[in-house]
Length: 369
Image (tube, rainbow, N blue to C red; front, side, top):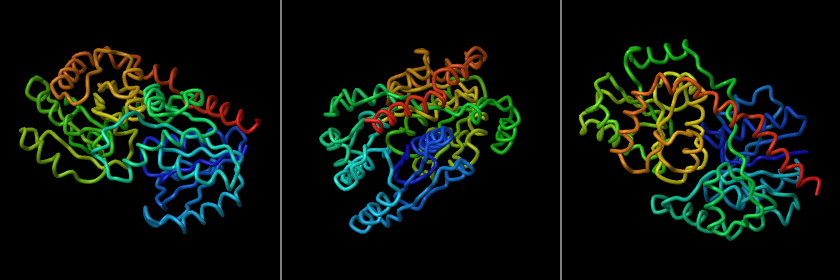
């Protein structure tokens, strides 16, 4: 097959990492594979060096660069001539589908999220998510990375018979326990080995609910007898969160770390990984990647996080700092037990080979028809 993935950009994010992982896996099986990005932001291109996957940037100048971008995109599609197109994320699903009358190529939509509180987002984003269900019937197939995403999609009008659930695949060769990386990163963070590090790896976005994490951290700091410190690994400075931590009396215990460094080292450095997401989560890469590094996780019951963790003791309702703090405290007490075998679940259930196998089957079925 000639498979074309379409995504907004290749920044460091869950969907973007999955695109790169899946593209490389399909290319290794002999398919011709390319990734087209709307914007010229491709820091993850390094993941694909030597893989044989082509990367094409379409040079979209802004959200409102519509007609010029559309012509460039159409010229590219006709020149590259894919057998199947697999856009990632809702906006790309809609854009690619708009070109179907001109290219007559199967389009496979992706569902990466579940339901959301759209009041927290701008008007364009709200329109996209409110109307995607109306246009889903024009997709030839739909792949959801979570059962939660599938249920939500059906509730807003997606045809259920077109949806296949394929969980994300975690590269366990890359994400693995490493004592050297752990010691190195903790030294950079000035954290002694005796300290317990509880962290959240997520872009700063309303759906990730960092505020609840900080409030839970304050409760943990008060109740735990251990030296517990907290790490927020995300994008850009967050003065509001820093001010909240200071107001709650834990300013000295909280460290903000830019996302974009060695994520494997960061996941290894943590003792407990946390997902405090309150909405919109499908399959949490951050949780699964931490577990692959041998770091157990505490999560909110959003998306398929309960399924990934597979231990109800460490799953709590969203937007509840008290319950989140209690689950973190339980995890700190259970660490010796939880560290054993936490990686095995990811290696067995959510590996890259299964992701590539299942996706290849869907794409080949469409192309052969």
